[in-house]
Length: 279
Image (tube, rainbow, N blue to C red; front, side, top):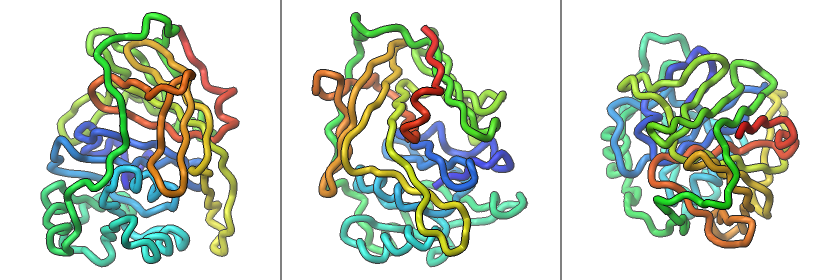
């Protein structure tokens, strides 16, 4: 789990992730969940707390879910489902994290090597037992419409996101608020090959501490838009309680992504009307 408060930017390690989820939390602020597989990162963070819907996304990848504390609901999910999700909480694994001089709570970091050591110490499996069946293609759908940019207006302007297609790199340069996004680890531009806009129902949940907590309906089905190769492809997502999320095109075929990094924007259904797509 990676912080996305303005005070936490620029983050460390996002450019090394194979997949990055970007989702609302409470108060109009967003948070990232980065999935690392093919590359190691020498610094990751700032690390933040768990939310239940992020845990469900981690289950899609048979991942070890790394976090620092969490909402009561999220911690309950982790405690009650140890066979379905392996959690690595900083509260119980402090030696594998460190704090910088940045103001709390934007000061907690780790590395891929430390997390691997932590997993081995706790006898957590680093071998995938399941993997979603994603499709990849190096070609472009000739029937797809153009998608040169996609703008997502969040209620807080500094959370708003724009993706601009870069024809030189065949990827989408990411901007947050008015600032181009870079990785503080290596100065690399955050520019995923694929951007998935996934629309799901969201609602406020029981929240004794009155933090404004929300949750998403992750099981079921809904609409999505894929931006890749400068093209826009409409599709559907579906997920059962027992399986990973499946992404399909409008004809029900496996959605084909370009090789490279994928950003998945999980968005409330009502956001679909406010997203600006430019051809």
